[in-house]
Amino acid sequence: DAKTTQPTSMDCAEGRAANLPCNHSTISGNEYVYWYRQIHSQGPQYIIHGLKNNETNEMASLIITEDRKSSTLILPHATLRDTAVYYCIVSREGAGSYQLTFGKGTKLSVIP
Amino acid sequence: NAGVMQNPRHLVRRRGQEARLRCSPMKGHSHVYWYRQLPEEGLKFMVYLQKENIIDESGMPKERFSAEFPKEGPSILRIQQVVRGDSAAYFCASSPRGGRATDTQYFGPGTRLTVL
Image (cartoon, rainbow over all chains, first blue to last red; front, side):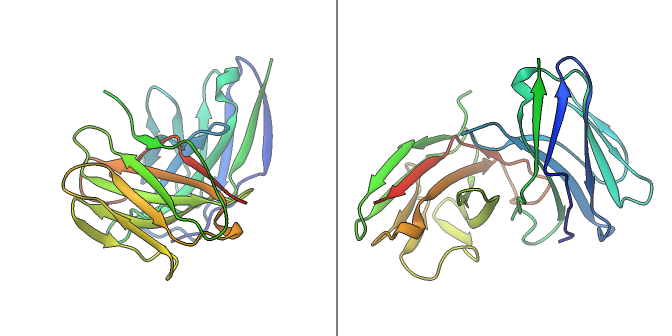
């Protein structure tokens, strides 16, 4: 699976949009981009995933560049409860693809 | 609809004892995954089970660790003769089908194992 690179930490003011970048320059054509988050002492929570097109759900938006080498997770109006570690994961479809590999992620701190 | 449930939430064992971690998947989910998170590390896949079958245990340590998901009851992750290096958070996830990347995994709150 392609490796991902994320900033170690980020701050965001409450009520503002949080934009979390992820680089996955070695991604291949059948690999999806997933985002999970882990609030302190809890299990990871699925946020969103996509292949090529931008995606939006009730939690966030996922913007994938045209060359698919990077993506950005957008939390449109960050709240204090969004403070968490955010993981960008790249995983192919097919055999063994359920083996999610979590790196160090980005620690997002939402500041009042 | 209750989420994935894990118990106990915290478990303390002395070196050489056995640890049993339980996971009840979400209602209607028949696929269970176990992950381990060492301190200051990301989660690492351990094993994938369906009812009465181990599908993939490629992430399990070769010795002392075993997992099962019986026809009735929760999935169990068993660690025999625990050592200090087994201290970690153990997370269970479930999905309704397939075991594919696009089948969203829903995680439980984890069991934090401390080995004295």
